Amino acid sequence: MLPMGMLFAFGLQHALVMYAGTVAVPLVFAAAMHLSGPQTVMLINCGLMTSGIATIIQSVGVWKFGSRLPIVQGSSFAMLASMLLIGQIYGVRSVFGAVIGAGLAMVVLAPVMARLMRFFPPVVIGCLIIIIGLTLIPVAGRWIGGGTPGAPGFGSMANLALAFATIVITVGMQAWGRGVWSNISVLVGLAAGSVIAALCGMGHYGMVVEAPWFAVSTPFAFGLPEFHAMPVFIMLLSMVIIVAETTGNCLAIGRVVDLPVNDVTIAGALRADGLSTMLGGAFSSFPYNAFTQNTGLIAMTGIRSRFVVAAAGVVMIGLGLFPKLGALIAALPAPVLGGCGLVMFGMTTVGGIRELLHVRFEGTRNGLIAAVSLGLGLLPMACPDLFTHMNGLARLLLGNGVLLCILSGVALNLLVGQERN
Image 1 (cartoon, rainbow, N blue to C red):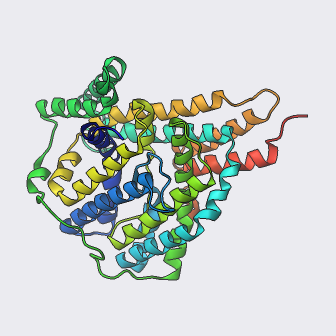
Image 2: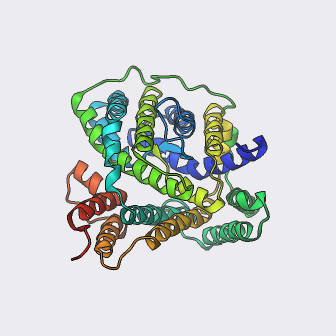
Image 3: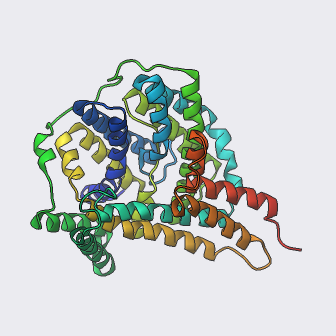
């Protein structure tokens, strides 16, 4: 437990890092479902508030719920395709019903899913952490370019220069900053980059003026959820991705903070995911999982306290209750986020490389396992159109590099993982 000032300074870093990813899901969902402006703002506020509550449950722990690791919870972008499919066929209320149903099933099945932990040897964990980091690099690239490829001004010299300046400031503070300044290097980079953007006329803060000061999220804002068997089944199948990502992030963060991660830890994390997902459905929000972006921040700063992450949860609840604060954070220029993101996601990748340095390759088939797992994990990013002829759910699952890396690594370890004769 750190002093209160430092606790919330470090927590604010985590909130800033995950903010863009959290608001992206309700923004895309609202646009695809043709929701009104007030409904969109309400979805964002609900998402931030429940994300903060979910983060506190996951990091602090409540009974058997929570990993008690410094894990930030956010809306899962991987579930968006399934939610849009359900919404277009059954309606918005069926989406939230499916979210609640899938969350309940995950709470019940968490101990069974956690027993899969024994199939994750160091070679699989190392490959998984590398894929998590590399999969996020394109996200940083889109932020650096301005946010949306193909949009006017994407990749302009102004955006690239702003991102480069943010990288230089962040790296400089991390490398040469003393004490707390080194630990909050990302926060300094975000603040300095935003000031530079404002001075250059690249900051847009109109939404801050228009946003209300205070708003309380209420449950079932779209009406009582509707429960249908097929939407719940589709959502539950899609939750396989959340299971894979949460398991992978628990293992990755366990390595970063030097804490053992066992079946009990994974079960608690998955129960927290399920409970948070049920809460999200009740408050017109979406499924939650461990946010990969924040793993890189922990690795970079060395701040391992789970209470810092809990403080980030409090910040997110505040952002959900005070829309003006949320609008201020949302106004952060994308190239500034991209500059900091590039450094953090690269640090996540380096964590995986360090893990593989402890793997014995001589006299084993670990090299073959790593080669295939890394190759398959990179396919969705290297060739995004590869699975275009697959149907909806298969395309959703095969298009997730983290899931492909986990499945191939576990399968190969079982089939060929024994030492050579």
